Structure formats: structure tokens, C-alpha cells
Image (cartoon, rainbow, N blue to C red; front, side, top):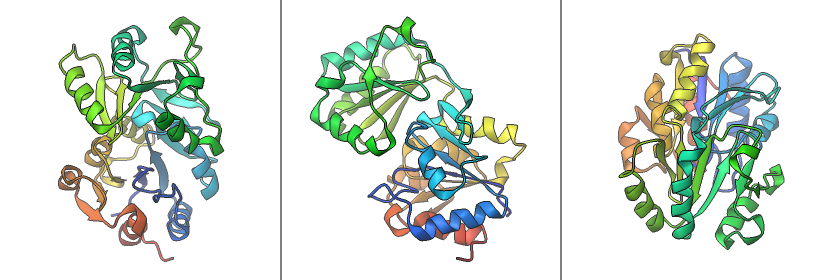
Length: 273
């Protein structure tokens, strides 16, 4: 099969444990792109800390990143939002109050900005989480009143221990269903528009590019990747994925620390390097 688009999750899939793309995976992506295949990163990250990886590969001039777990799609050359799923901000208030009462850190995301209650008084764990992105100038700002935001809100992301998030996930799913409540990592829950997902955003992008699902390969590692893996003609899970994600995949490759993406590019995309 000649795949015209390859959709890649970043953390836990394309990136190793040091948040880097291995040299041979980078070379393979460049080779595939030179043959005309579109490389699209599909990530929970923002454009600010995902586009630099496209720039490192030299694939940013005419590329796309699907960010905030599918809440927005951004053209990497112009950094323009080409599609997004805005949230009803008033409906977020009860979730924010729950987080405050249960000492769960949360942030509010527009396409390019992140806002928190108090940048100076963030929990130590939250400060460490943001610190790993500082090289890409991802700095949380003070959350203003909703009406003072100049861009649509796309996501609330909650960060806490797995046990705290297990309780929050159970509780929130008993409330009136207003959002896509997505367990996007062991330490994260994302609240997004009901139509927002990596698979939904990938479908919008693919249809605009006149690319059929059968012409798409998607590789991921977590529950938030399932929608794009199921939409694609070939859905692949890396070996470090949970069992449920592996069970839903068409194929399992090596782990993110063992160049799993590289081996799938070599097998299915004609990579020679």
C-alpha cells in the first residue's frame, strides 16, 4: 500500500524517553517526506512545543500538526489555525472548581497559550512538568476572566496522581455530558469539545487533502491515540502501549525507545536508510 499520510503521536511514540527523535527515525521521516508522503504530528502538545520538531526535520514549510489531542490543526509554515473545536467556557467552571477543591492542577489552553490560576504558586510537580518545555518557550500565563481571552478555549488539562485522576474521571463521567473527557496519559485528563479527537481532526485534514483512510498510517501509544488509529487504514501501537491499545491496533511495533516508528516506516513506507 502506498501511504500518502503518516500520522504520528509524539510523546511515548515518536519521541524517546528523553523527548528526542532518534537520528535514524529522523532520516527515515525525511526520506518518506521527500517521496511525497505527508508527515503529520498528532499530539496533546501545543503548536509551540510540537512545531520545533517539524522544523528540526525540515518538514515545516508545508506541514501540519494536530495539537491539543485534536482540538486544533495548525499549518506549520504559517502557524495559522486551519481548524479548531472551541469549548463552552461557562460549562468548564464546575470542573475547575472540582480541581481546586481536590488539589488537582489544571490549565486552560487556547491554540497557542496556556493559562493557570497562579503561575507563581504552582505545585512542584506541575512546575517540573512545564519546565521540560521551557526550551520551546512554553510559559503558563495568569488565567483572566473568560471575556478577556482573545482566542477560543480549546482544552482543560488536569494533572495529578493516577489515583486522583481515577476518582475525577469517575466523578466527571456522572455529570451532564458536555465534553469529551479523555484520559490522555497516566497523569492527565483532558476536557475537550465532544467532537474533538485526534481521529476527528485527522479526518477533517485528510478530507481537505483528498486522502482516503486507506491511504493513512497512524502510530500511537495511548488511549487518546485510538481514534486516529481506528480511522487510519493501518493503525499501529508501539510496544510500550497499554494492553487495550495494543488490542485495538492492526499491528504492534517496537517501543518508542527502540525506534518503533522507524521499523514501521521501513516495513510499510519503503525506507532504505
